[in-house]
Length: 115
Length: 115
Image (tube, rainbow over all chains, first blue to last red; front, side, top):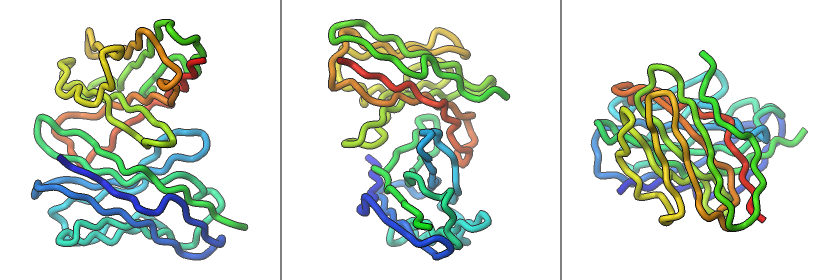
């Protein structure tokens, strides 16, 4: 079974600074996909960034980037130039491939951006 | 694209009553997922369907919970009888088969309160 661990329940960062959110996972699969989702107070689930396990290059989406370490089974999210609108819960998620594909989430981390 | 549509947005009911949550996935999506979100347990996968067939219901907490997908455009999650510990936000999500790196598209969730 796959598990996703987010060990930090809460983090806080000053506006305009950089913050890194940690995530580790456990799997015996060789091909899979990793995601970070954002959930603002509106409770909408918003995809932030995705990473294919077979790609060595780290994914980047504007101010968001990941540090994917496949051997260590680590997938951290870096938010640069933090903005007040980044305040939200962030979930790391893992998805297998194949007919029985499903998405498994970590427990999430609450990020607060201070003005 | 109207997105995943869930109803109702909020549901308040008394213990022992039957509750039915509804979901309309995005047209053309082959997978449908039901998740439950609580503060204590985060996002838990309850059940998911592929082409209207239940693939994995191991996350369904007990026999009081049941889910159906009679056709490609509609699914229900039923709780009978409901209990206060069922209070949570229930999300429905859908995605396309074969596109493993595609994000799940989430509905806005149903907040269930059982008194």
